[in-house]
Image (cartoon, each protein chain N blue to C red):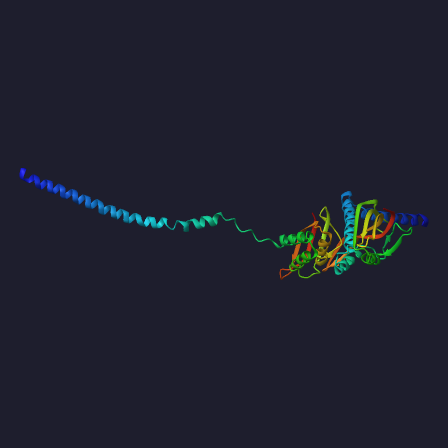
Length: 192
Length: 158
């Protein structure tokens, strides 16, 4: 009898947990599409920020401000991979360190463009409630110096995306919002 | 009877002369009465003036704060250089209670429920427009304080 009671209680607990998950997961395809677009827009925003930071004509104060904004897009301790046609290994740097290295590149003109930004793994709900997906981008880098030092490459990079519903209190009001954060950016391919 | 004939002629002549004089004086009176009519016609240009004013286009109605802000947002996003964008940012900020005034962005609506992006503040939002060179939002709701300054802004995707 005790065994039956225990089994019934366990079954009820499991069912209630599943019910809870399915209620939270009840997102219409249109709403999911809007969340996908929001996340993709954050990647495009980062693309623009990186282009501003790398641009040698950007005033230092502006570049610093943009670095702060770009850093806010990432989860804590996220890393960005850096590759080169001249070496095999890929170096990974913390986001701020990556930006600081980018701003210090010894070229007179730097152009960075991201294109073909798309999901390779759709946002999927995880047991912890977060949605996780992967976006791929192609980056065209061009560094040109007046003394003839030129470097160009195209890098394919994968960016992990985390989306989570959070709450915050602003002016005494509780606001629910979707927090989109970028995780590690890993280099998967480097070509000329 | 024959003796009276010259007198009759004289009377007729006198009558005719009197009539002629009468006509002339009446003409003078008539011309005297028509002259003021000329004076009335002379200030005609004064009458034309209001007619010209009527044809002028009516002054454009004062733009609302929301319209002005939308204008600033577009100008910041399309500014040809950073200095121009920064000048517009300063002007736009003058409408707000503080640089930290919260900005909420609605990216989706369903069944009366709003989905918000991460809340930001007006200073960051204006710089976002400058950096990203795009203004994908329109003003949906504005909350003013007692001094008429904006203390909260809600935007929605276009």
